[in-house]
Amino acid sequence: MKVPAGELPYKMKEVMDTLDRNEQVTILYRGKERAVIVPAEDKRRKRISAADHPACGMWKDHDDMKDVPRFIRRIRGTQKKTRKNLT
Image 1: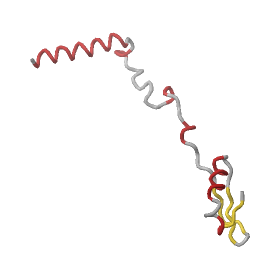
Image 2: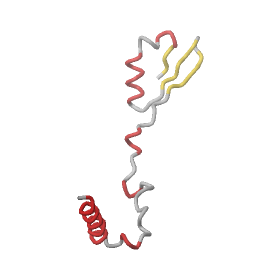
Image 3: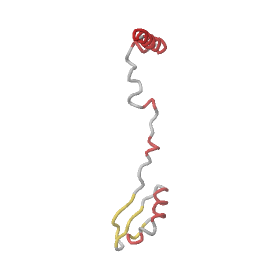
Image 4: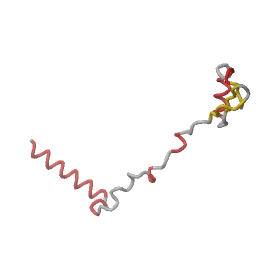
């Protein structure tokens, strides 16, 4: 879509609709191309899965965490002992 600079405020809805269709808008000044407005990247489309996140698997090299239920029992057992010592 090409829009003269003087008409830009009056055609803003059309400009926004054009950008929503992922098309660019060219701004004309005295009949010559002066600027191009391009649609911004949609950040929601660039989501990564949890498995691809850098923090995923950061504990995979720890041998004590291979058996998760055992590890949790060990941690919780430590907390129970600490609570008993505080009372």
